[in-house]
Length: 190
Image 1 (cartoon, rainbow, N blue to C red):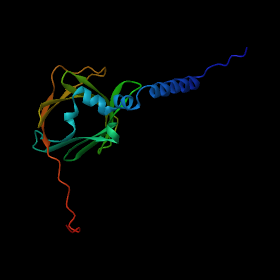
Image 2: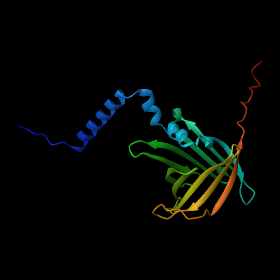
Image 3: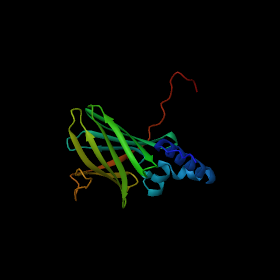
Image 4: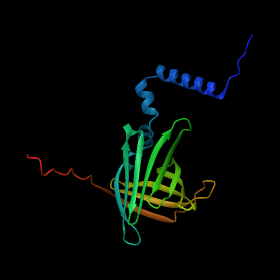
């Protein structure tokens, strides 16, 4: 009998085919919904974060923060902006690792990556940022709901092994901003 040696690629293809078969057996709608970021966010009770938020920092500058759904709630985009700084991030679910991750870049040439987790009533991002010339900073960013119009964001120091400081080094309250009404096109006639 001739036995063929199984390669990693063949195993990967087999696992993929088995996974596809399992998905076909399960209700397609239910399986898709449960594997989406939107489902996880809703189940965790964190969909209140979606929207535009605004705060004022210690220097009196306006800080804007926005979380927005994209791609049928499989992606959440994040934008953070204040004078002379802007950051754009993408948040998505990696089913194979059962992790919600974030990657992003800023206008100063930096980039970063992190993982989201729910701790009680807080959504916490454990994030590592690499600046333009390679300096690395680590932080935890906790988001909690104060009320329907207020979100508290706490910044924690984070060790290289992912442990957060006991107390936040900075706490800011953001106020929800009303969605802007669509601009009327003056060239159109009513």
